[in-house]
Image 1 (cartoon, rainbow, N blue to C red):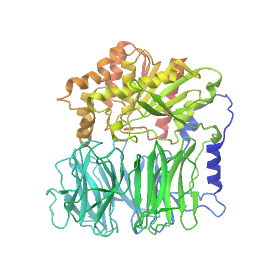
Image 2 (cartoon, rainbow, N blue to C red; image 1 turned 90 degrees about the horizontal axis):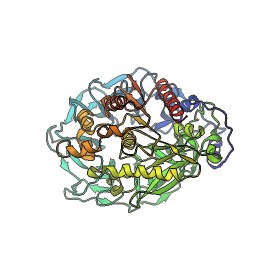
Image 3 (cartoon, rainbow, N blue to C red; image 1 turned 30 degrees about the vertical axis):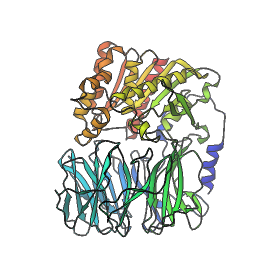
Image 4 (cartoon, one colour; image 1 turned 30 degrees about the horizontal axis):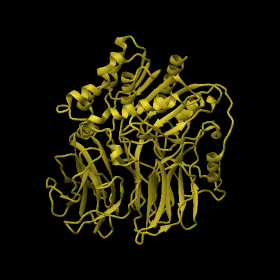
Length: 626
């Protein structure tokens, strides 16, 4: 409780700031905790933290010490590569996790004893991607792999006792494992035609062969998405949340025994469900809604729908990775906010107590110096209000200072009120930061999310132009020193701004962004191509349009300095995208700084690499902005 009180004070306090030189190193050393997994008996928490350099598995008790402090955690894995997808076996004896090499996203599956020890390989093929986990009662591990053909994922199950592997489903379309019934009879399959449209199918594993077509559960005409699938203990219902026939994703179910059953909704609200987690014993359901980016968590009696007492947390933050103990007495989750480093909390329902059980590493920084974000809405070219998080630097109170328009990736993403150490560093240096959720962002209804699809792609770029206009009007901002910054799709946005709005930006930062839509769609991972074509356009049918929106087409308009970073192993936005734009800009004689790292993929996962890239970036901005 002492730590919780401390976190509350961090949110509520205001402070003055000293203007001494600021190093980026402590900000790159700040570490929280993520991805909790609670043991079935509710006694232990697994989590990942990169405090050792890359994200590894740690373990500690699922409660605070008697005096309200945190127990000392135990590190269980010691790899040079980051670990993801950690979870317990249903009997609590084993841990399953996933790891790739050099950021290539070709994840392999591993298993180890719950207390640490020898690591065993579940599924390994360095040329293939794997995802998977334990069945409800732990007899099997279900997983998918694209070893047969890169663009398709076959579904397998492995008997944990005998290690015998059985092929269950061999698709000829973009499909993936979505769940299995507790009795291991019904296999749930998701068929994808883009991030905004998919279908759910079901297959009888006792009668159907791997190549047989599964039965469609969710026929629909307008685009719809389905998430959070869970088949009931009796095998009669499938629970999920969906935006089928509505703007926002709400909780729903479908009767699996009726071949003509329709989707039945369990709520009707004007915000998306982020998570809806049902306890193993079907006693409770924990739900978070995305309310203008802010998480609202509620607990319900699963059978009656009655709301139950929930955890008490600071308002205005982001909650994810919900886990429930088997007896539904404990709920673990991540909580973070712009001023609170990500921590794992446990809500003990029997004691009605919420405790942070991990302690953040502040790396010598004063947590009172972290600046809160303000939710604002600015008008775009057609009057559409664009939601954004505004971090106004306290250094800019007496003089006009530079500002950064920070574009998120996706485009089907959303900037949420979570802790961002790099943003806090920029703010500490005197840069104000605006992070807009331009059209194409999720969280505001599917019409908003699809408003930039196809031929409407440049509406989001115009939203970015009006972010610049909003910044230029702020009394503490120097309109002549505005920087556009983005990674992945945000990198495309940054390049689009530098080519199509070159007169209003002082510099651009492109982290592994798309420069040429034709080469991107050709070279991105085969398992992603159809998904991305559904979002951006068909290379044949929409060829001229894709050329017209590609930053490389308009590179002659770039006149301001550019910083580019790329991971050599990136399977999503291949390094050839960055190399094309860098070569073209250098040919023009415009200043461009390029950092290519051989051991990174779609992001920067290793601490030494983060130090190098962001130090280079900060030095670049200092130099070009003088």
